[in-house]
Image 1 (cartoon, one colour):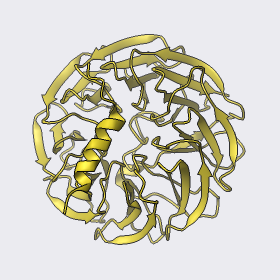
Image 2 (spheres, one colour):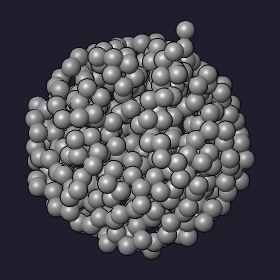
Image 3 (cartoon, helix red, strand yellow):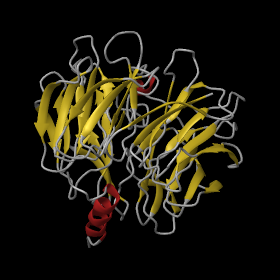
Amino acid sequence: MKTLSRRDFLKASCATALAMPMLLQGSVQAQTPASDWPMFRRDLFHTGRATKTSKMTAPKERWNAFTRGLVESSAAVGDIDGDGVVEVVVGSYDGNLYAYQGRTGALKWRYATKDWVYASPAIADADGDGRLEVAIGSQDKSFALLDGRTGRPKWTFLTGDGILSSSAIADIDGDGKSEVIVGSERVYAFDGRTGSVKWKFLPEFPARSSPAIADIDGDGKLEVVIGSLDGKLYALDGRTGTARWAFNTNGPVESSPAIGDLDGDGKLEVTVGSSKRGVFCVDGRTGQQRWFFEANRERIPSSPAIGDLDGDGRLEVAIGINDHRVLALAGPDGKLKWSFPTNDLVESSPAIADIDGDGKLEVIVGSHDGHLYCVDGRSGARKWAYRPRAAAQFFSSPTLADLDGDGLLEIIIGNNNSGLYVLGA
């Protein structure tokens, strides 16, 4: 196995790239996800916003599971074997994708690749057989669709670069069948049944951002929105993969875009972080900049989450910055609403939910300082912090899902001590 960390790998990639001269709307969002959190950032809009609640005022560790490598992948949750109990699926730097029983943490299966698995899995019925599959990419350049019951590949594809992008599964061309979309040296759209390439798009530098999917221009057809290390945010036609527009941030886009009606005008905007630049909001129809928040020329691997954090009827954007902060920005104009300090880099992507059952939203996010933080959505004040035993950095992003069927959310997150942790009330 290679020992080069993802952080060092991305820093080298970004250095090369930098040297270059109230309601979320849309047909995809209205579809019910396969589970509480079946993919990176929860849904195809990448909102990071859970709809269920919990009563977690002081989190308790429900179970943990240890791999043989860093767990920077973020978990997906779904009943992948059809037994009525959800599973937790997550990757590790030991080269394996693991599926654990959601209630107990017992290992159901593992799928071995030849290099580290940073990408987060996606869970859906990709081939139309009525059962759930798991899609995953690896740094060994391979991409696979796995049988959810056994973890055995249904099809595989070898790309031209390591895969850090987390895939999305949707019918992007309107033919009634699902496609699987992921970034690598190209952005690929695979036929969900066969794994054949339906289209591919070549950015100037690799796409390590993860695709969000929505009808962002209101034409009744879906677009794929993804960032690239070439500094651009692309909106691609879901049917053909051709670019509808490309917005140049002038900084590597490691962050994955989130989509919502941020200004309440009934039309969709796209927000994303750009390393060495800041946070952008772009008009979904035109690709023109709506607002920009400068972020002290820091890297921004964190991806934004969208929700009405302060209950004022307008959306906010929550995102981590590598100057050790978590930010809440006003959706309409990008003005800072609050800033929460941690003691190290924040590369974890925030999740949003009413996690303590008080009727108000909180922001959940990890930091390199080894803590998972719960932050008051209105004020940005710390509500609680959790640090596992022998904690290392949190690169992984929190997943919020009901694992035991009691109607309350648990928090699932990986740590760089090689562990996966499940927290509950």
